[in-house]
Amino acid sequence: MQHAAELAVKEINARGGIRGRPLALRIMDDSGRPEVAIRIAQQLADNPAVVAVIGHLTSSASLAAGRVYWEARRPVVMISPSASSPDLSGVSPYMFRVCPSDLSHGAQLARYARQLLNAQRVGVIYLDDDYGRGLRLSFTGEFKRLGGDIVEADPMLSTTPSLEPYLSRLRQNGGVDALMLATDRVGAELALREMGRMGVHWTTLGGDALSGIEKTGPLAEGVRMSVAYLVDQSGERNAQFVAAYARAYPGERPDHRGASAYDIVQLLASVLTEVGTDRRAIRDRVARVGGDLPAFEGVTGTIAFDARGDVPAKSVLIGVVRDGLLTPEPGQ
Image (tube, rainbow, N blue to C red):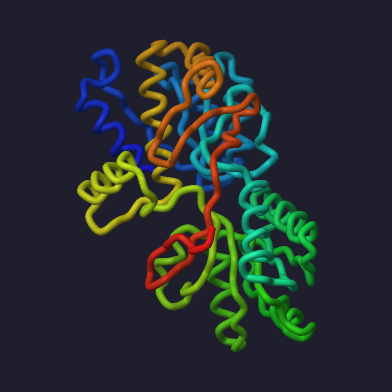
């Protein structure tokens, strides 16, 4: 997020900034913790120089911070690149996101598992937070609707030391055709390591919170995950962004969070150019994008907000890890 946002700001300022003034970023770290996000949100809302917020990264932090931005004496708009919990929809008129919600991710993963993998029996391990619960519910609902069987769904915390009891019980119950990990990357890596030690080789699925797991080498080979953006997707705008990102950060490739942050900065730059720096005017202009104003064409695709601050037209793809890269899964 930070690298891509900084790249966007450099490009905007190289073009002359906003109405002749340079755009500046203030980088804050909420550590993915709601209590820290609340404190940071209050600082940003109280700072008159802050005209918009790009973030927060996680759903829990976004839910906590979003209410602060809205209830501030002078509310400030927040646009998240990656907070995907369904609970965020319509929470605040000042809260937007450019990523599909977990309703889209879970349903797409369920359709992929049932229709392309022909999976009948699936086990689910989920992170017991806003993200994990949302993804689990959307996945299991669609998978059952398609005639599949959820063998069991087990919760974990970020501090859970082992998933072996869950995995052993799944094996004792006859195994599964696929294992759905509605967790973050750390939880998924823990599951994969313990599956390897147990000698089980179930097809593994996950949401976009697994992004970056492809860098772990053979451990993640064959993992499937839902994403709203792939670095190799077509389009001249994306190709230019990826090339610029590679020049700015040699050896790195952007993920969906970075590409979305880049889009948000560029979108906000266009809004600021039109309406200036008044917080209410910025929010009102953002809310009209894709409504009575044209949608914004970004590197991640078309951004068009609905009345709940969501982008319902954004599509979800399934990527598969092959040789350390996340590539589109054929047949979608």
